Length: 145
Image (cartoon, rainbow, N blue to C red):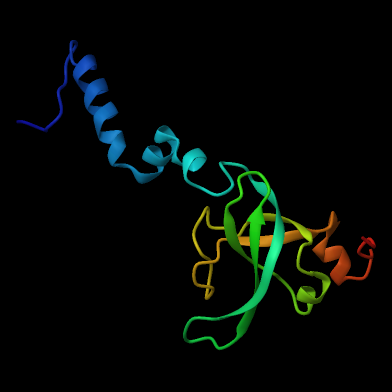
């Protein structure tokens, strides 16, 4: 007999209210509705952000892989937060010096670390206004500063 939810011609209010309460158990809804993407993430909800390079360093990858991944410590221009960013492709770290302006984007998992890189959530897209891919393929040169 009892199937758990109210049915009938006057059940709409009860169904609507219970749905409103239970949606908060969904993690993605909670993040979206509470606005935590704008409050807590370093990019403040934006897809890209500019920053100044503070330091270059290598990160050891997690098991079972064995490599030293090249990373940067970057201070964001918009809010002064310091984040770590991955430098993609072989030899691209050579195009980046300290105090360069870089453009960062997310690393593909909406604020989570990717693959065997522990705690690194962002990657470098541009250096001094020039695409890192164009520098790598030798289509452009980095401007003299």
